[in-house]
Image 1 (cartoon, rainbow, N blue to C red):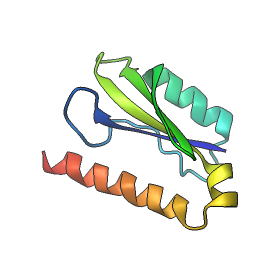
Image 2 (image 1 turned 45 degrees about the vertical axis):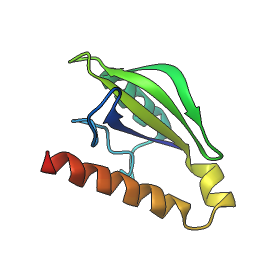
Image 3 (image 1 turned 60 degrees about the horizontal axis):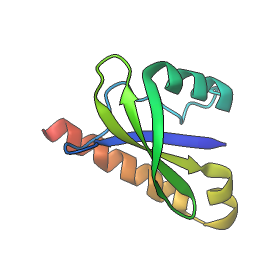
Image 4 (image 1 turned 30 degrees about the vertical axis):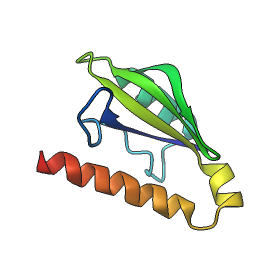
Length: 102
C-alpha cells in the first residue's frame, strides 16, 4: 500500500496540512485513500526521492496553499526496513504537534 502525509508548507511554515486524510484507518482501502487525497490536494511535480518515499509539491484545492507531500511505499518499507513505518508515524506525530504550537 501507499501512505501519504502532507507536511511543511512549501516556501515556509510547517506542520501537517489541515484536513490531511488519515491513512491509518483499518477500513480505508488504498483506492479510497487516493480518492480522498485527490479531493483535497492537487499533486504537482516531484521535489525529492528517497529509498522508500517520494516528495511532491502539492496544492490544497480549497485554499491554494502549497505543501510538501511525502508519499511512502508502505509495502516496500515493511518488507525491507524493519521498524521504519513506526519512524514515519513518529515523524507525522511530531509535525502535527509542531502545527498545534504555532
